[in-house]
Length: 409
Image 1 (cartoon, helix red, strand yellow):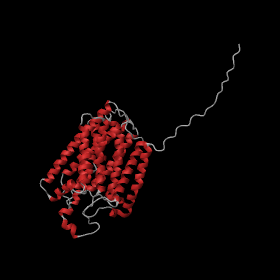
Image 2 (cartoon, one colour):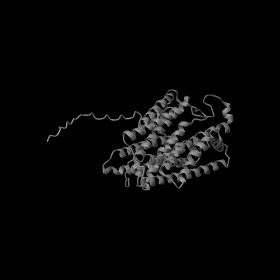
Image 3 (tube, helix red, strand yellow):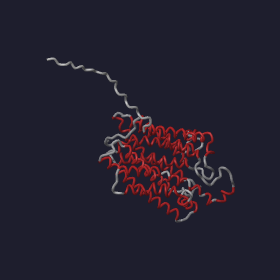
Image 4 (cartoon, helix red, strand yellow):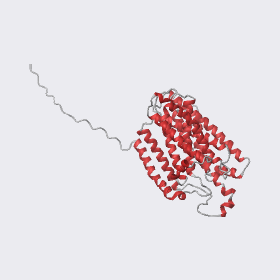
């Protein structure tokens, strides 16, 4: 019996080409936006270097503006987040998921510190003279203390970030813990000193008093709670499970409590200022509430920064995404607080000292203020640089949250 031979042909096929990676991934888009913002904002930096404060709307009557307000805002976010993280993890022992956020907390704090120093350095007019404070410190000046606290705090953040980035031998494990405890008095001192810089200005009665440093500390805790909650909800690697939702809700409840305390404090301070009716103080608050930029307080901050987050956080059907959105609104709108603290108390000069304003005229003798394009561009440069620092640490150095439980970090 014969069987037909079956001819088997083998063909060598080349492997299918790998699919091309898309040109614009979300990560590349973020890098591109950061670089674009840095280039556009760089023009504002160039103007500040070549023209000084002449390209700003600042003058003799209003010497502090957008730069100082954003500096205060960045310091609140930077120090407030680290303070709150340290208290929750090291003091209150929230040893569930929160200790895994250490890398990102210190990375974001370093980025905000960079932004803060750019804004205040350029606002001083001669940023390259900063070494004078190191070489010739005047310890009776709060600005000297503010500068030195920034230097020490930056060193602490860099060491803590390095310890989180690279594992250290067991015999050096105590260093990270003690540095965290050391950061508590340093951070509190920095916030209080920044508030004290305003509180001791004799020519601005609306700033004067001992309440402002405490209010700065409370504001820093609110901003820090918002940023820490936002970071955890949106950047935690495993955004599901009971532990994740429980931690998000605890952070949301903490943010809600701090928001309510801050709101009550603001109402009490406001009524205390309005009741005696001291012109320089009451007029500043009236400008904040009913002046040309009333919407900054009532709409931008009051509605979107306080009312909407409180409603989102106080409802029973809390979920992590809603908590994260509420925290993001708090962080985004909290810039209104330092803007209202810094600018309106300087604009009252047109009301309470109108004779002085009308006695002399000149380019630097304007009793009004609105940031110029160069000031906005400088703010864009600072934001973009801080964002790129965060992107570099997050994507290149892999300074990301770690999904693991840490005991007694």
